[in-house]
Length: 96
Image (tube, rainbow, N blue to C red; front, side, top):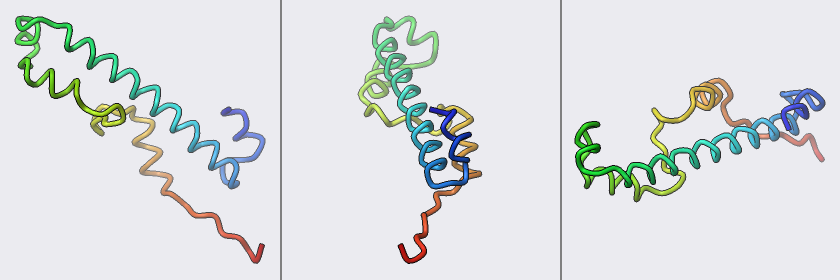
């Protein structure tokens, strides 16, 4: 899909939409990775959890978080940077 941004240009309405869709896809992929990590956390025994400084209650609380509830500090840097450098813009129609 990224090749489409070259065709339409990043600044066109379609280019910006494609960039947003790519970011959303990456965000979903990362959320799935975090979900797998949370399931793995539940498999650890109390000793292993203590070794990493997490209680059983903390592990249960983390595992019960919603799918898309990923802390900002865990999100990939690229998504942070894009959000900071590309504020959401609205498309303006000139009498169309």
